[in-house]
Length: 318
Image (cartoon, rainbow, N blue to C red; front, side):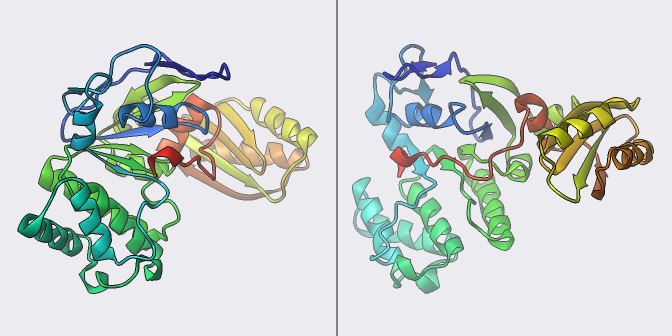
């Protein structure tokens, strides 16, 4: 897919990927990388300048109507009416997709039970907790039993317990219904746990794709992460980089504020020399960790920086 906006910004520069039925596919990348444009095209809210798009077996450019009936969309911003009850939100969504009578009642009941919302079905959504609202959002996306579900940052703003519960439910959805999911997230632990395959997008192109284990396996050695006691200025950052660069065995050195990262064949053995070099440079250390490669390391290697703390919602999907 290729897409250039009237402003001249090239959002997609030949992005291409395939998602197998029944898989969770993760789409990662920094803000402005092209994820939002990709999601809008796949959900028929935008058209590419060139390229072909097939979703759930349908040509999204020629028959967007068929695609819309085959997909569910859960945007980062909730689409539920906060002044209406959870049950009525689901009933309205079902009616929009042509469900009526007993079929609609059965489906609404199933979803309320599945997402543990039965006890709150008669309450206005504005009284729901963040976790309950997010579960309702996913239920709304599933009312019409879609073949493909698009999840945009499904756990943003949730506490760790609610986030884990959402991950459990997503895994059950895939296992029980052979549902295909396209997931955008900046929680790397999320994509590591849920995704069968993933792609990292930057500047409108896929820079790397594969399974989480494949991508982590490409990184040799241990990840060494060092946190300084205080945030260095530009000169101190340069000193930190130079101090670590002089040490044999350390590679892929990055400095982001107080956080320093590097790779080493034997991470534990490299730590004493790294601490000594930083101390000599006048940069006291607060904490050190040594770990096997993670998705954070994969992302850092291919994008050059960590995922953003805040993400762009795909507002048009709301």
